[in-house]
Amino acid sequence: MRLAAIVARLETQCSLLAKVGGAAEFSATAATPARFPAAWVVPVAETAGGDLLATPGALQRSTRTFAVLIKVRDLRDPVGESALDGGLSEVRAQVLAALHGWPPEDRSTGCLFVKGRLAEMDGGVIAWQDDFSFDAYLKSGG
Image 1 (cartoon, rainbow, N blue to C red):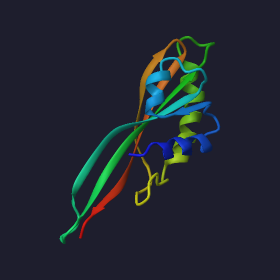
Image 2 (cartoon, helix red, strand yellow):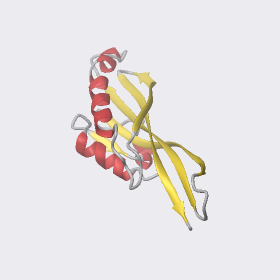
Image 3 (cartoon, rainbow, N blue to C red):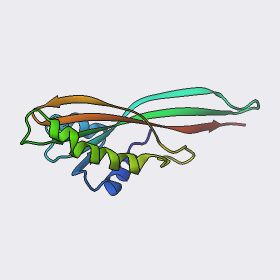
Image 4 (cartoon, rainbow, N blue to C red):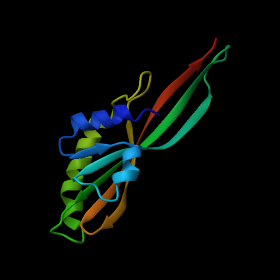
C-alpha cells in the first residue's frame, strides 16, 4: 500500500491540519507532536479475494485498509471535552471530504469510510482513529 499519495492528499486538502505524517513519523512523533492538530496515515490491513479470471493469468481484488490518526488539543480544557466537541469534528470533516471517493492508486476504487473511534483522551489531547478502505486490482500473466 502506497501511503505517500494519501499523506500528500491530506497535506493539500486539509488546511486545518498543522502536521501530516506517515507511519514512520508516527512512531517518532505521535506521543508529543509539536503542532496541533496533527494526523498520521498508517496501514491497518490488506485482504485478498480469489482469482476473478477463468483463464490463464490472475486478476485479484485486494481490499486495503488504512487509518488516519488525528490528535487535537485544547489546553484550556484538561479533560478534553472541548477538543472533542470543537476542533476534532471540523478536522474529521475535512479528512472525510479529502478522501471519500478519491482513488489513491492507479486501478483502484475510491476510498470509503469504514469506522471511527476514540483512541485516547489525556491532558486536553484527543486522539481519534478513522479507518478507510479501497480496492486495488492485482493482475499477472495470461
